[in-house]
Image (cartoon, rainbow, N blue to C red):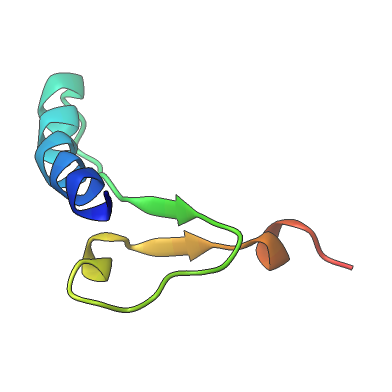
Length: 57
């Protein structure tokens, strides 16, 4: 499942920049409850936002 999402992100990021004609960088940001496990595919995500980042006590 993750590999499919990974492949979609790889293909869509340059296409988004091209279609919107932006000169800004397109970044993949993951919003998750548990964080990101580092593996061979995790380098596509530039930033990770967890529940702790969203809800401070």
